[in-house]
Each structure stands twice: as C-alpha cells, then as structure tokens.
Length: 222
Image (cartoon, rainbow, N blue to C red; front, top):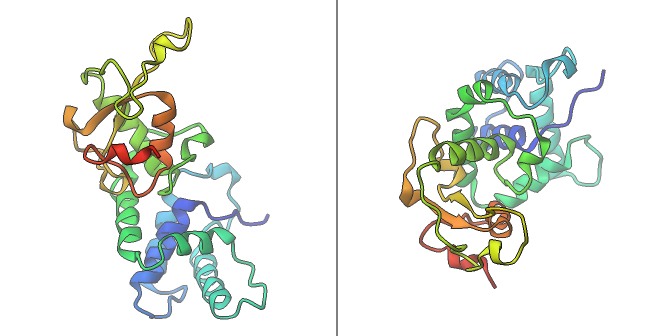
C-alpha cells in the first residue's frame, strides 16, 4: 500500500523540525525524527484504518526530509517529494519564526484534536495554518461567542444581510480575531476578541494573511 501525501499540518511540523535542526543531519534514529514521527501519527487527519503499516515511521519521515533537501539543491532531478513542501517553504521564506509559532500551536492543542474530531474536509479551506488549527478556531469561536452580542451590521463591509436576502433568517456571525498560532483551547476568549461579520467577510478573514485583528480589520477591503 502506498504511503499517503503529507497534509499542510504535517508539512508545517516537519519543516519546523528541519529549520530547528540548524543543519544537523536528521537520521531515522535521531530523537527529533522519533518525536516527529510520534507527533504525526497522533494527528487525527487520516483515519487509522486507511493508514499503511509504515505510516509516518522514522525512516519514511527522515527520507522525506532528505528528498526535500536534495530537491532544493538539485532541481534538475525528480526526488519524489510532495509539492506542498515547497509551497509552504516558499510561503514562510525568511519567516521561520512564524512557522515555528504555528507548529507550536498545533503541538499545544494536539490533545484536543482527538477530543473534538472534525468530520468535514472543507474545514481547512482558507487556513494557511492547516486543517487542525482551522478546526480549533471554529470550535473556540462557537464555544466562546455564545454570550457575545451581535452588532446590527457587518463591522467590515457595513451591510445588513437581512435587508438584502429574503427569508434567510439571521446571517451575521461572530468572528474570533485571535491569530491561529496564538490559539489555546484552555483559554476562554471574551467579547473584545470578536467582531460581527457577514458570511462573505467571515470567509475572507479566514483566507487573508497577515491575520487581521480588532485593530486593523478595515484592511480587508480594497
């Protein structure tokens, strides 16, 4: 059975280990690879019944990193490494500290991914930080916004959806403005951490980077 392509979350964790190694060779026997392998196996992204026997084992993870490094140094050959590695590497070029913060957020919240599993692959759409932090964002958003009063209009585009769409009920929602890499399931977020948004602005906020907070949400519009 062929192995499964790395998800964005796994790529972020793997590149963080690589960037943090300071040029040290990450052999299959190294502590860093051993811990990374355990971390990748603990993530609930791929159901266990669909994983091959060698899923994210130390040898496979180490070889994936080596192939990525070889491909970086010699792009004339095919090293059988997923393009997502190069995409994420490019996105966080010269910003390895930010990628490290995202990886740390995944590790910090990893225990809750199993307690609150996701069931919709669409949850990762728009989240540069991956499906897991996107899932935690939505869970915390729903959990902590229950007592947050909605404004009468979207705070970004200023529309009142109910005046535009017939028989659709309430369409405004609450958006959590905390950066994904700063999320912590153990923290209870308050009214000051939310803004009222329409569906379009809410979707756009999840896609726009750098992340917009309560001080600069006006930057979303042209």
